[in-house]
Image (cartoon, rainbow, N blue to C red):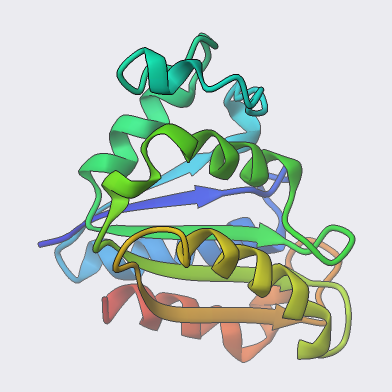
Length: 178
């Protein structure tokens, strides 16, 4: 059994990327894994201030928000899923804030498995290149991070459109086959 934490960066709890996240979680849970989806839009996570206080305080950030809870879940996880719709060719601010706030402990995420789930209104994979580069920019800093899977659903804008394309089933299968 693996512990899976999925960070859903979508501000729309019923949007396309959230639907893919739910399918991934369903597959992971049905395969016997402990899987949890964190809706970042419902959490208060301020951006990193770059003050380096965390390095002087034994890894403790001076900001008091929901990041401490998220940090603990990430540290306990075997698998971390980063999910976001494409916003101006990158991830949402909600997911970016969490990634930036891992500054004090990202090295403790060493060896973890990572999956990426991306949705995009654009019609092709070329619209996902920069968000994938940004997500990999994070995981390449994590020692021995293992990129295990990428799921990109393109050509979806309105909530629910993702249910009509193959990536909807693929999200379930990806979770099931961790």
